[in-house]
Amino acid sequence: MTNNSSSPAPSKGRFLAYLRVSTPKQGEGSSLITQREAIARFAHRRGLEIVGWYEEKESAARRGRPVFGQVLRLVSSGKADGLIVHKVDRSARNLKDWADLGELIDRGVPVYFAGDDLDLTSRSGRLAADIQAVIAADYVRNLKEEAKRGIQKRLEQGFCPNGAPLGYLDSGPAKVKRIDPSRAPFIRMPPTSVTACIAPSRCYCRFMIHEEIRTERDNTDAWICVCLNEPHMDGFFPCDSAGQEMDPVDGWTELYVCHRCGRIIDQGSLKIVTQTSRSA
Image 1 (tube, rainbow, N blue to C red):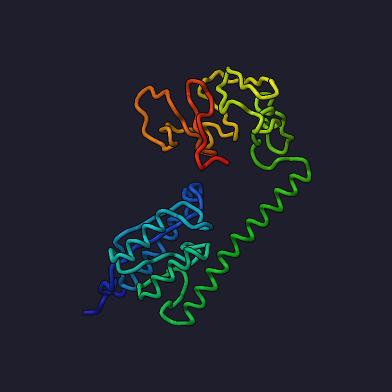
Image 2: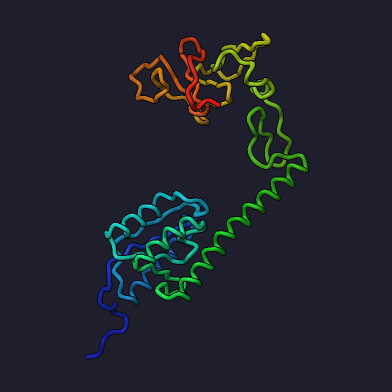
């Protein structure tokens, strides 16, 4: 009786599969499907059992991807025998993550790239993989430089390429940003001239030069710190007298800490109580 060539070889280990795209929008396309199919075919040919599929929709340009970190920890702790990724640049586009993966390989943990014919147990195979990792990292550096050049060009043309900065109103793409009459004075006035830390909307924020600024939104929770932090930015958190954040009880009306500069504010008086070590 002849063997069916399509049948997988006996299992040679339990592996995790890692798939990645750079953004959630890319995840809606076919890339993850293509990666999954390539990894499944590779495992089938090699007789490798995939015991877990891990997908991530995040750029690999910086260290700190949670799913990638989880996969490395699982493999490192022996929860799986090895790891399969589609290509080198799907695993890392920064050299720190590549070094972490290299530590697993140095310990003899099997790591395969389904789309790259690389033997990572050989010196030449490791060298080829290292070169691809460096190229992947350089690709990110080049993108950053191109983006900076594009931003500089738009600025030279008199346009802000991103959303309107604090103190300006967004007039739409490729249009000059207009000054926000309610917030621009906060930008023009130096923070050292402010006596009150925060100013809720529909209230006045008094400056040492006795000018008064009034915001337009009818929302008493819309605070602006002297460091220009707002609730939708770094935010304000309930805290104790030492500035330690804490879970508030219902109706908390006491102290808050600015999560950007560390100033502690009394909610009732809207005054700075003290400054923690986080203060600039």
